Length: 93
Image: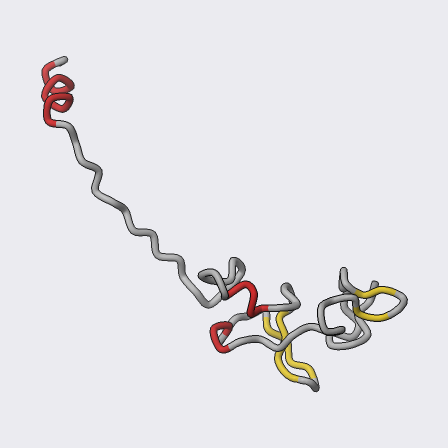
């Protein structure tokens, strides 16, 4: 249904005929970690996320999976090579 509380005019899965069915009756404000994310919308009651109604829960265990301002840094571990197997592989040619 179409949201009638915070994000007026946009589709919301929590909206019912009785009103917003989310915890607290409306979407929660964004947290400081959201920062300059492109998925934030301004409303008269504050800044809200377009995707998640409770951004705090997404940042509680690491980071938001759809944060557009964070770049994921992958660290590669150097694998230990068994010298015996490496010497056998080298001698095959």
